[in-house]
Image (cartoon, rainbow, N blue to C red):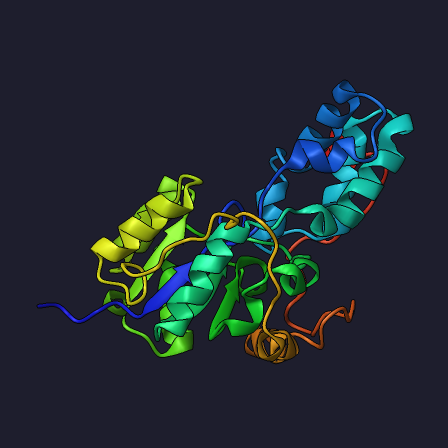
Length: 269
């Protein structure tokens, strides 16, 4: 019988935290149409994955986005981008399951395609303080589904790919994990289905876990987990060569590959 898989690697967006770009923008826009324009100009743009890859800076992306929008929506765009990480809904049922896996002896991780703004959302992820490791694409200049990021994740955490199961809502990202030698589960939004899939792989705690009726409701984060948030964040930033959380300065050698600003970037690049 194969050894149990005890290392569970989660994507963040649409797995541990919800991803609702239109809702972010509609918080500040006056109409649905304006919200759609703003959301598309940021989150559905060609520049968004470049920010996640650490290839361009946030100011560059915002300057390009402004070039697509009328000036009356520039304020909405700025507020949306400045605050979206505070608006992401928690996916409580998946976080509950993750805690149950940890209680059963599993080691938990996050491997996310995300920009430097990950620092802002991380403390809001209920399970963050229980993680054994985190790897974020923008800090490393490599993204899922590139096999290199999964290999880097394993190297960074001293793991063999076969010891890990990767959970992501993107079939492409799951395929990348499998090419790297990991098991993968494509999350479709159903926490119970995720539990069953993990149980089939023999992940400890998955078979015995019974979700409460209020699984989708907020729950109190254990004090010891809350206390470890800064520790986990410090480890992430140290491994990525970054400074302390929320320090806007960038370490030499880790600057985005393109960092320019200007009102006409949307037309001139």
